[in-house]
Length: 254
Image 1 (cartoon, rainbow, N blue to C red):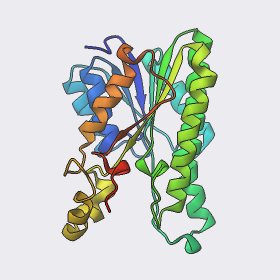
Image 2 (cartoon, rainbow, N blue to C red):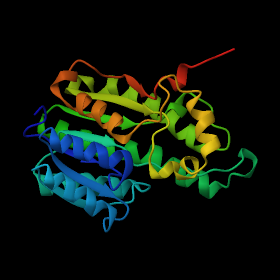
Image 3 (tube, helix red, strand yellow):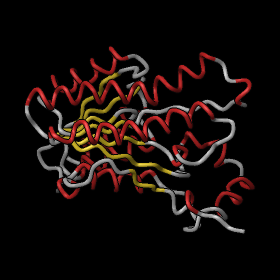
């Protein structure tokens, strides 16, 4: 197991990609701090599966739209687990609206969770590592829409574009401390956040024609890459973004 003895915090891990990452890291040997806005119900299923993998899991509620909550999340994870080695910034939301109708409140909500949350959680995590003079791993879960336009989701694209450059900037700034920072940009992944798409068969058929591998991704596809980036196998990898999209981002046909 590549992560034996490690401790990881996975934000937004109550379901979907975050849950799959938490479970995969546990199966690789890590103890897991499971975070979500609500820790009853779905988050407890993540906890059960982490424990079924033979690893310790803890639940911590935090609203990452607020910097003080992000700091408290890291502090509480350290308090309960003793230390942290891996941070996966997975928590994210999206709100659909034509650009000319986007409200300030909706813009703030998306940017605060997706970008501000990752920023201040990473800051608290980096302070912990630097203060204890230990190396560590930050993995930011972005989206192909850090590169691809997504009409109707301008605030989401702005947040993910910001996360892309934050990943690169932190890789440079934190590298001297032995902290690697990498991104994963999923494409069309079959999760609940895409429920409206999954229930629309004609839309799914059109989408699949744009994916060279001919299928939507699974949360486990993303989790497998996260496990690599969290491990010592990726010790010389930093500042990179990996696209897990079946070839969607670079598919062009005349």
